[in-house]
Image (tube, rainbow, N blue to C red; front, side, top):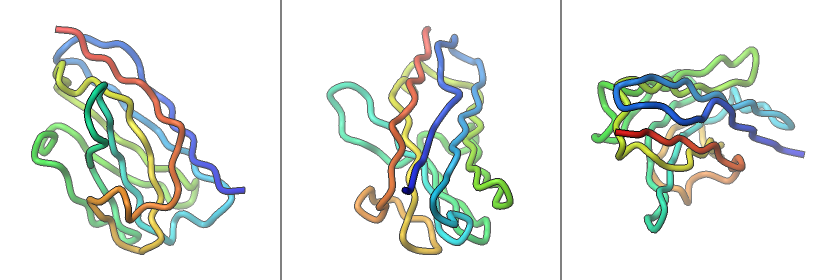
Length: 123
């Protein structure tokens, strides 16, 4: 059974940092692109960051320069380091597994999803 489990969310103040982790099992996720998405209350799920099988990455403009996505293939882990957090970063963050070796900004390109982890940034 394929599983993605996120961890590392929490309540922080503006300017703080958090590191989200995504543990993948049941599939060799190292062979596929992975992504992080987020969804705030009343808003659609939006792309945050993506990493390809080879380590290439891309970011949403809103997080570029503050967030860093990385992967540790030997451990089937994907991370999202979030620095200089802002109140507008408050959302449930989801890890997603693609069916392609590349990252993609579209949620429809991802077949596997975690349950999400809440990140709340207070001002």
